Image (cartoon, rainbow, N blue to C red; front, side, top):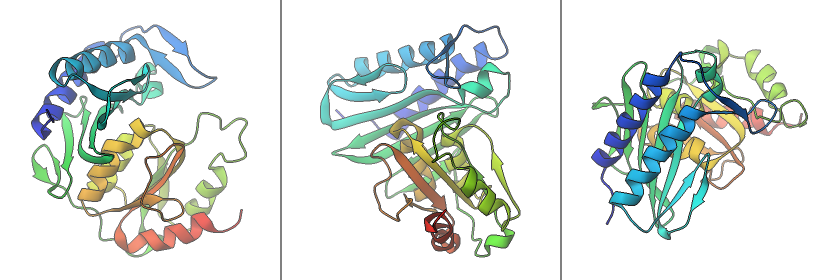
Length: 259
């Protein structure tokens, strides 16, 4: 049995309500890395999502941020981020979401990203389009990098890795209207799909960070690729570029130039 987009919409909304109920309460914060946090609400949201997926779609494989891989059929695979933007959440910053994607035979076909603080549900179905609360999404028509507004993020090993994105951030900051860092890769991608940002790039993410948002941005008309221009941006470590079609090639040039 395969899910439908309404299935993902329900799961995202219900998990989002768990995040909303826990927001601005005192949290139990654990550290997976120096700056990589997890809260008890991450785990509550994940337990709900995995329980529902296993109940409704037994035998499906699930790749989820906190628990890892739930074995199942490779032909039916889910990518689950129960709370994208945990650092924001733990600090009481209202920018976070639930991200859920479903892939059939290795191709992501359905995606839902829900921001419970704004009640914004971004969804997409491959070949049919992308929507925000049921209204069609359209990526930016920007063609001039100098007039563009971009968004990015930084890896959890920024303190130690030479591939920390700081050089790229500086490059784009000098040739655009600005570069934002908001703290949720899934929402960054959705905002590109909504035309709120003209482009987004980031290094060394995970499939659950980008599977749903990448489909949403792509179905909204953005061009989404790896940093080498390749079609596959889901295989880890996921480094990707999502941009208005008129900016994608120029952004690739900047990202591929020697540091």
